[in-house]
Each structure stands twice: as structure tokens, then as C-alpha cells.
Image (cartoon, rainbow, N blue to C red; front, side):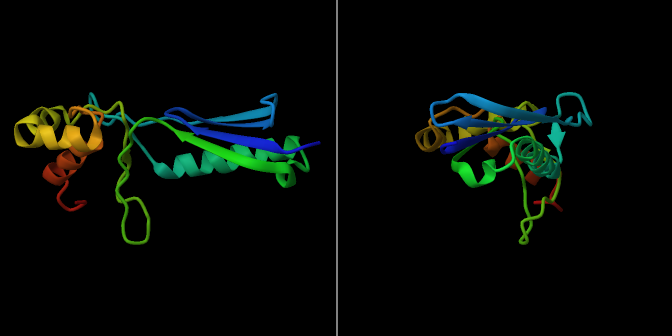
Length: 149
């Protein structure tokens, strides 16, 4: 067997790992599902540890099904869900659940940003402020969870 590629996609509701040969032929795939919390209408949060555990589990299952593949992997590609805001402490531990891309609690913060810094924000990020972006989510945390901020 020749070199292999490993693909890992950490999504909103599941993590999928695939093992393929270098021509792109799929050899094996594994998926581990998880949920996200909706503590209030319009909110969507997830424990970042769920992502890590799902990655570990998919890789364990994938490599168990394909013994010897670990030594054949020549390249790894990783993709993730849309913008998720994860605030970390100095040790790299999450301070709160991640605020997911589909969370819209920061709509008012996103609406207020254009008056303050729209041109500069668009110049840096290439997009107008929206509640799925990190910047409004960070403003929301600063305003509503100062102890976390």
C-alpha cells in the first residue's frame, strides 16, 4: 500500500474522518456525532472538549479498521465548522462554551459596528459585520459576561 491521506472535518453536529489513497479513492470513513446547546432562543453553544473527543474517537475507530495505516499517512487535512468563538484562559482551557456560527445573540452588536468602524473592519476582514462573525460575539461577551472577558 502506498501513501495515504487523512481528512478530518469538525462540524457543527459531527466529526468525520476519512482515509484515502493519494489518488483520492476513499478507503474508510468514520463519524462521531454530538449536539449543541440552545440555552436561549437564537443561541447555539458547544463544549470545545466535545470536538476534541470526537476527533480522538473517529481516529481510533478509523485506525482500528485499517491497521498499519498510521505509518502510511503522508498528509493530513483538517477543516472546521463556521466561525466559532472560543475564549481560552492562559493555560488554553475554555472559559465558557464556544459560541457557534449559527448563534445570533450578537445581532445588535453587529448592527452597531458599521457606525463605529465598518470601513476598517471591511478592509481587514473583507466582510461587513454580521452576528456570525467573531467581532460581534466578542463584544457581546464583553458586555454581558464581564467576568469571562
